[in-house]
Amino acid sequence: MAEAIPAESRRHSRFWLYTPFVLLLLVAIAWSVAWFLIRNRTAETLDAWLAAEARGGRQWTCTDRTIGGYPFRVEIVCNTLTLKQGAVNASFGRTEAIAQVYQPRLVIAEVAGPLRVTDGRVTVQGRWDLLQASIHVSQTGLQRLSLAANGPKFTVTGLLPQEVASSGQRLELHLRPNPSRASEKAYDAALSVRQASLPMLDGLIGGTELTDLNADVTATQTAGFQGRPLAEELERWRGAGGRLDVLMLSVAKGPRRLEAKGTLTLDEEHRPAGQLSVAAAGLDGLIGNITGSRTGGALLGALLGQNPRAQDRNSGQPQLSPLPPLTLNNGFLAMGPFVIPNVRLQPLY
Image (cartoon, rainbow, N blue to C red; front, side, top):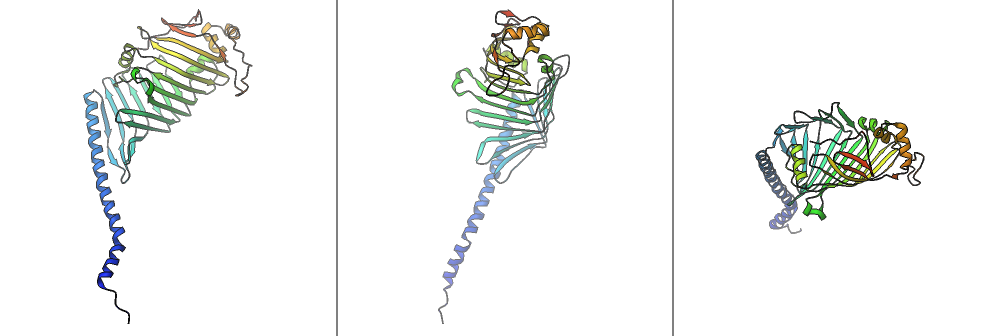
């Protein structure tokens, strides 16, 4: 008869059998405790930020705020999000912000419409099918902000006598501090709008085709932005010597194309000023509107190299022809040495 297994050996065998499950349970308990500590710390940090914003004159309201996301992320949800600063009021729909526990400095947000921003005189309203944003921060501040919207639609009232409306298939915006121009407090921005409907642009250059727009710019003296009313922010920027470096502005509307590069500022009367290098194709309608004559526009366009039949061999698009430099000075717009009639630049604020 075989010897019986000692009771102590049986106990050791069972100990190693259950050890992985016990360790897993302990890890789960420790992780849960850590997550709730992170959740509470997040709520305290958010409350402190809201209090600091209130001291700066910006009243944020997150209605029915919830903080969840257990076990691997922190998720903050507001049924509506509003901002009040002086005469300016802004409101958004349901807003959800998410950060992974192991990557807390990268925040992904999804914002529902409608958007409404007003200062009592000008009102901006917007809707979209989907709007998402990502925010990457470090100990020194913002590193990168990216925003993408599907099916955006915006209307602006109170700025001009008529309502300004626009819509598009997709909008993307990317923003980051320029690492090589930190002394100028410069930020880079890249904007892309696909298949946009811009009725005001239709009347300006002709045609009802949808528009594609791309812009890469660098703005200096922007780090002082404090969320003040727009006119105050622009005046602070102008007074600090801020300028907008247009690295590339590209507009395509059917057979009409335009590319521009240069630098823009604001003069003492708050009007745009600066100079742009421009290349264009198919802009007879725009030139005609400027000169007040379609026939004169076609003739001047031909003199400036605007041949509507010229094609780019690589893209098959109308070939761009360089135009004389476009200068904005003292409220006037000049192409080369010639001041464009019927055009006066108005103060922006």
